[in-house]
Length: 324
Image (cartoon, rainbow, N blue to C red; front, side, top):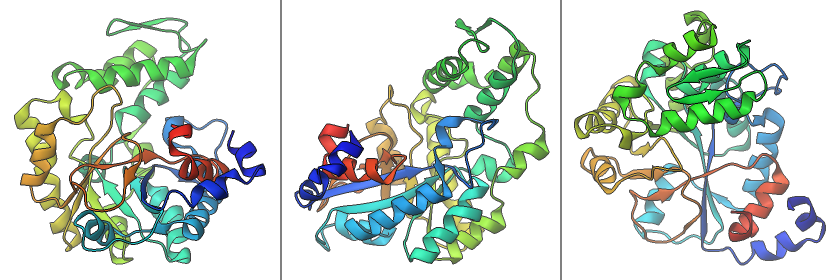
């Protein structure tokens, strides 16, 4: 669809009608290439360096790419720049965000917000989504029963990974806390070693370089759990504590928090209020679609996953309703 719209040049016409639209794009991993034997979650490894650079160049030509502070001024009604407006956000503190994505942004002179969860930085530990994919991709078991799910990782690896992901995002933390160790045992595969996990993640020094390069660094909770699967005390810790930890480590104010996402469990009003009370000036809602520029609630900024090609980016920006 994206290619057809581009051939007809309809996207260029429709783009002019989106002057009040705000697109906050979410990226995770940006690899040099996407290897066929990638060991972790393919769902966060959708972009190569070349595809990201092409998208960033397209955004720079066809939208106004806002910094964190510029977005805050728009949300507060202090400025009303003509759009479409866009914001680049990068989640989860993967090392390639520092090694590959940051140099591209610097070369183009574009701002971004890097949302960093604390646990991976401090404990050098990958997220459960990567651990689940790692053991399911290696399992030789024809059928696995795990927490009431029947998984067939040899016949349908992607289906098994999606099923575990859906389960993890919706279960209370007391049920899912040790789930990856249980899944590894069921798969008869060891979790990746500490050294393997550590090499996939940024260090604190690298995150400080991101900040010194002029990029905003925002909180992404302590452990990247879906907040509304936690009790109120746990949620408050997950929201409030990262701000102080990041500000001490970076020596810079932290204005934003990006909530981890689950499409079946929207962020609750209580959680949004926790972010405001913790002192964040901006809060970003996951998988929430396209926003409108102009005065708005700065604690309800919607984000959307970045498409995988410049053509799809163009069609999404020009036809947000059509492209979902």
